[in-house]
Length: 411
Ligand SMILES: NC(=O)NCCC(=O)O
Image 1 (cartoon, helix red, strand yellow):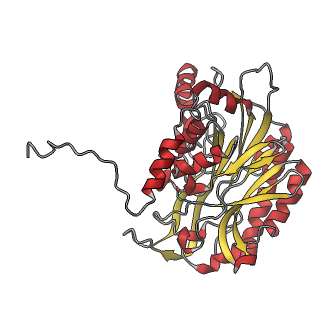
Image 2 (image 1 turned 180 degrees about the vertical axis):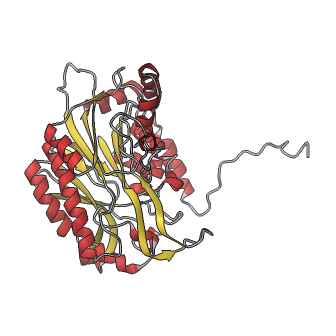
Image 3 (image 1 turned 30 degrees about the vertical axis):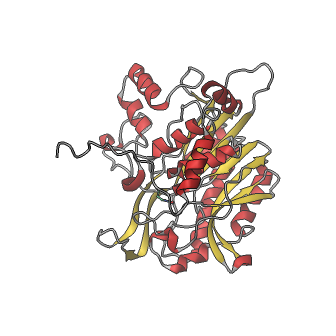
């Protein structure tokens, strides 16, 4: 762990935390501690971009929030995305929060104890978000449980809950208490349709009501992500939820690799799209800072990216048909939750190994301002792609390839 004087743990004779970057919590903190202020500012400009021609502003939070963060050992960071002042519209300011967390007790414990321990921990972080005036909060994918889908064991289905089940009721109370919209990604059990299991985000309104749900559209079939053993591709399309604070969508984890999935939320008018995730370093870390940021740029909306943290070890070793020897964990979930904005700026990331709460103020006017500036939507030529896609879906589709008639001339 990096100490408050910015030195990595090893220099102080302490072991570096598992998942740290040479003892630092994040790349940003590593750079901050090791570059001169001028160089750090320049590196930040290149890595994070500028918002309204200025470096992204950090904002201060109530003392109670920082005290909660210290007491419960979670990282907390807060920033502001501004927009230009307009003559005819007032700013549309919203405070948004993302929570990343590790599981609390071993996966061998009683399921009820595992769930309760996570809920207890999450409550402290939600209290910090609520006490900081967060308007919309999103939790990580399948937040009530370990990400046990690597195992293919069906006993983990017991964690699935109906949309209006225990975790929703728990969050409804907090949503009402803090006048806050909460997006709650859970393993859903659809009791009205033969106990079907889905990977679902429940959107709870600031009055504690359930506004609606979205079910994960794209299910991974990569590495240890054996999720297709548990649930099918979602059947809810690309809903955008008009909340008291703005129009939001939820693109669950692996959906972030699908540009059309991002696009569809944009076409339905999303101003903020959340990407609650569970992914590990070896598989996806180089993609993590790119895909969400690109989606924010391409679709002129804000993106909140959330990844769980820590290493979750399961009772029985498993293999995943990829030739690796049997193992009992997924690898390290690298946290690194952050926000991306339509103007290509983004926040630094939360810790790579600790729980965290990242908060960002955003003026939603930026979405339209960037549409006016770059005109990506206006120039998109959707009709061209609609006709290609409808041709592609036909069994007799032939790819449009023009072969060089001289291709074999030199052979
Ligand atoms: N949870 C999930 O869909 N993970 C897949 C791996 C990835 O997309 O990085």
